[in-house]
Length: 162
Image (cartoon, rainbow, N blue to C red; front, side, top):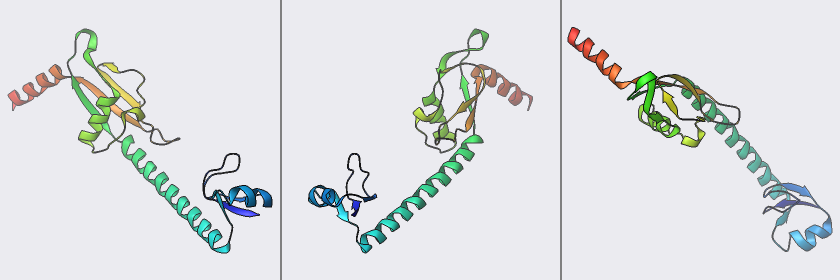
């Protein structure tokens, strides 16, 4: 007997699945427990529509993820930090700082746990930081850490020369 599952059933399937089960199993367990409904033509048509809607939803999600990955791949963030001897920062740049920088400069809201930064950035330089957008999409954000004292001195020299 063909049934459409109304709820998840262990060792059988998830809600919305169309399954072929034994007549007794359907009659004695699935139907009385309202775990499944008989596969009538109307329910089968509804099932097909639900599958098509889910497929369209997945395609939209994949397209949105691709667009976000493309946008993130072009992002360059600049962080000004106090620097001590040998180019070491007095603090560090963490994934939370990068997420806040993305939100402030680009208007992109990303969870800090999706930013794949194993250790905080503790030195001046340019870093490529991957972001997990989807399973196979990991664009790299360019993070540029500069000395705030050096940038102020450069700005003062430019403004004094002008």
